[in-house]
Structure formats: C-alpha cells, structure tokens
Image 1 (cartoon, one colour):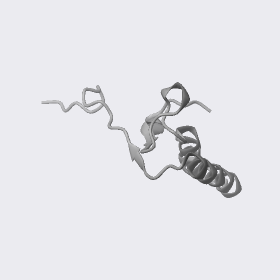
Image 2 (cartoon, helix red, strand yellow):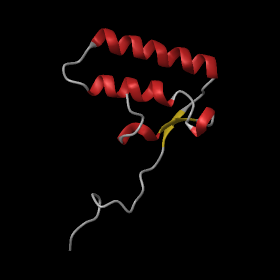
Image 3 (cartoon, rainbow, N blue to C red):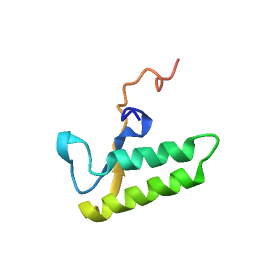
Image 4 (cartoon, rainbow, N blue to C red):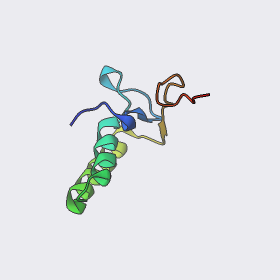
Length: 80
C-alpha cells in the first residue's frame, strides 16, 4: 500500500522512527484505509488492528496525533 494520502499525517507521540516516519504510522494508515474500504473486510481489519496494537506495545507509544494539513492548499481556498 502507498504511504501517501490524507491519513499519512497520523503519527505517534513517541517520535519518528527509521526514515523519519512516525512510529507505527504505516500500521495506523493501513487500518484506517481498511475501515474505509467497501466492501468492509472485518477479518482483515481485525488483523490490521492487532498489528497496530503489537507495534504500539513494542514501541511503547503513549499517544497518537494528526499532523495539520498545509493551510495554503488549492482545495481549501474560498472564492469571493
């Protein structure tokens, strides 16, 4: 799966891991994308949830936060 997308800003309060990516970011993104898919694959999402939980325990993550989107994007500008 691609790591780029709207949910790519999900990060962990534990800091960045190897390559500058937030700790457990890929696991969190995979889970979010799973629950957004149609049709919903419950078993797959449960496996991804367990994978995220294992990462959180191994990396001792205390809290997740979302990075803010840049304010100067073309889709968010209002027309006069």
